[in-house]
Length: 153
Image (cartoon, rainbow, N blue to C red; front, side, top):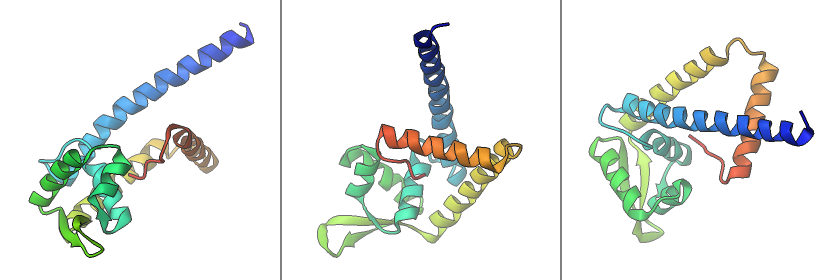
């Protein structure tokens, strides 16, 4: 096999595996959202992870991080707020904006789901050498750096 053909085969393998990873990842995020609360779906878990990491965050910053518009974020936050998982308050620096934070219940539920997710990662990668897990994490970080803003949740 020529170098060009080998490179093409390598890129096809990466594309195939990344597509599978993304497909499974979307399903996993939806499952994690339902573990936080049975009525949640979609990116709610990731959104809660971003809020948990940020503390109090403006809704516009959430939208910018996830690459979605104000209406979509407003709708998602309204669902989370209605379930008692987040609270909104007026931003004292810009009274036209809202700051969002996890409620105690939201933080408790999110952390429980995240701990379950971490246990799953440990089970999946538990047979790997620590150096292999570190290298895998570094390669994923490098890949995420190439594809835009790193994913936090």
